[in-house]
Image (tube, rainbow, N blue to C red; front, top):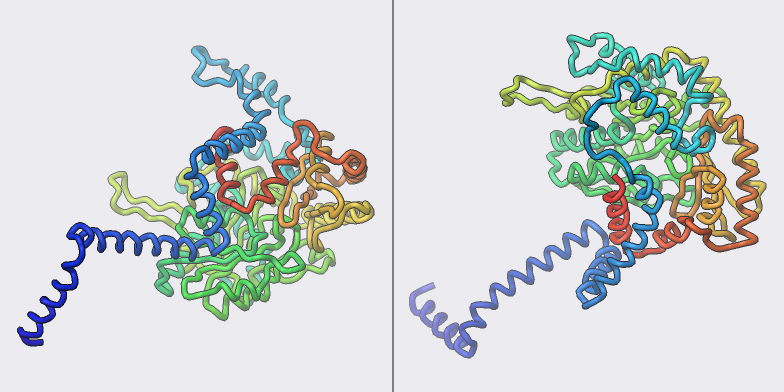
Length: 537
């Protein structure tokens, strides 16, 4: 372009712009940048949360700008939170807030015994919660307590000091892996893992390892994972902790992971898909083989959540129950989480995370070389870990052996069947899906199931309230085996009471559960839960 063309362009531009105020010319590019930034933020939010939640969030946020609306919403939220916390607040009165000037010495044990009396009567009355059968003072309870006591001072962080605990952990991992296909040729012969504090930590580590492994293999820096809506809430926690986009997809009509729906969400940033065996809500096993094939075909990780099923399904299969493939014998499974403190009957706070090979597990570890305290490496989220719990898990597995687990599995599977059959005979209720294991979920088309739950709670039962659909479940343990008929009797009576006198009972939580399930703005439900937790702990 020659100088005359440039001069002509300048003259034309100046002539055109002369009709505008200088301030307008100054603000126009700034406002354009602001608009572009707003649009970019909106589309990023749309990408992360989908259209409906994004629009709802926008509308709610806009409504709060109206004078008085925000205050009204906050006041209503406070009422709900206060109702949820009503019992807990009164019980906190008189709690200690500083050290006593003079210690109690050994008499502190008497004080602890007094406090324990205030615990709920959980024997046989809680869904899941306590998996060991019998009384705390004898049998397996007593054995576990003594084993933990023997190693209460130990810490596997110090491998050179507490060699016994290091061996216990290695053997718990190896024995658990053997239950889940490590001896099968198709497993690859490299199954490895570590003990953790529970199913959530096992899941967190598996997700973190998958993220970093896929980054090293494919260079993925904006990771995404896909889970069915029946997948455990620990994956949401992992997504928040490790900055991973989480897609929750609806389950199919059988309440299993919908393989086709998961397939539609896979893209270049997908690092992980998830299946459960069984899922926590309904006790139903996802199609693990199909998900494994999907993961293999896309070259991504596949985690199987066996936190509930790990110490039941292998034995149920051996007892003749029709159990579909669920472990490392399935091609494509890259990691598994399994809780020893559930049906493994170990002390609370013991789980195992397993990987198909060492290449994946290495991404679980954290090694530090620039610390003035020396070289440091740790296998799990915790540095120091309670050797007592590891010892207790080892003692549980060795004391029971295969024969003990088979006997226990037979008892709880039969107990679950009796409960399912009994619920099916209550005409106002229906079973959610077809349970594969020891969790029985049930709902109602004619009653408010949460009102039924309130009546059951008044009778001392602690069941799990579910959503999508609104329902309850009982996770059957050895504690329930002797009192199946008591449970069914109380359930029938509770249904009868609600049928004859529908409506919430005083102090019941049915209205809150019902309202939460109907709230279109899930962000507001999240706020309620956070406010509740903030005032509870």
